[in-house]
Image (cartoon, rainbow over all chains, first blue to last red; front, side, top):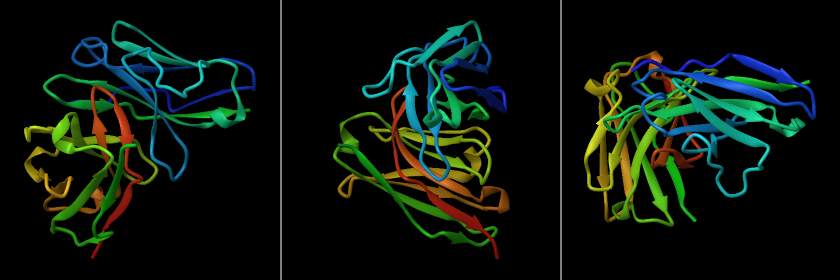
Length: 110
Length: 116
């Protein structure tokens, strides 16, 4: 069970869009439509932002969207705001009731 | 609403066993979902440790399987983590959580330091 691959950091200016990728394998990301994304501020617990690849929980702004192609999932944040600066983690169901996370991406709003 | 709260020692000696408990409120563990543990070493990413189905079946990260036990105390609506033979590499913030195919509810996390 190997960690999913995310870029260590991404950045964008307010109002711009950024996309964070999450690459796995056919055993996890590519094999199931169960990719989720989490936002984490320093010292805080992660917060679910996207589930089932592209669904948003109630209360999450529609600026956040998710997609998947093959073994790579993506989180896109449009209309960047200062409050979006945080760490973002992807997570995929990996079969046999196991889960695997990405290494995390630090988003900087310039 | 569903709330989870971790509790347990914040300091564990090397080679000993780490034990944490998660108290759930607002939902009965026996009613459904998976209940599990996730950890995050200081400055690093998240790692799924293991989960327990509401029926009691358990599933563990292969890299930790030989050292991990997750159990449930239904009357108290709690579930617990035991991690044996700990080393400094097990120093982390430990989160308990409710899992579906995503993780919708998290505890606030508790820092466990492994040190003599």
